Image (cartoon, rainbow, N blue to C red; front, side):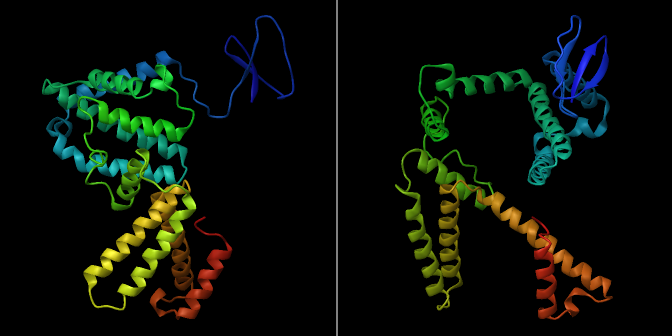
Length: 297
């Protein structure tokens, strides 16, 4: 929306209307677009710190929290943020970002109480790292592509005094397996261990698929698991090479399957039946109905 602004009053204008009047300014504002100044943002962050300080003293629950007790909640809040991002729900993203931010300042508060670090130390260390690892922005290095930035990032990390001494040592052991596979492949690729042509990866995928088929004719469950793992790893590699985030891709399929299966169950309930009373043919027919409606997409 375009509007004229004078003394706090707004006058709606057509977007093609031009104005050049003394004492008026023409402003374009998106609906619900945030309009907070730098001072307002800093004030809001300071208020959060003040509230947490007070909670830490006056609230029995907040007062008893430790790094260890907060950890499970932090994982949960992070997953809720991930869900909001996958759902492309801006309101939920804003809310969940707040919950994650609370945990960040909470850990910093605990660090402050221990005399180890505070939120300023956290921010300063982050700023120093960002500047140091972006020499193409804050220095004289050249990096014209995102791929070159990532490659430089890994090399810089290894050169830091407290940085990773091994290329893959920075990948957390507790990462979900699908994300871990992508991260170790990315890090290896950033130091040159990658396919010369991305199309070459499909030979590897076919090789691993054939090995799974061959192994299924045997009786070793351990070997089956190994071969399936190799196949999954090769598919993650293919997704990475084609700029597809495998975890996001699989989660979208999960959501699509859930939406369509829920449709089957809902239709069964409308008929006064339980879903397990439907024949496979009936389920397939309802599945195709859900698919035609693009449920979950």
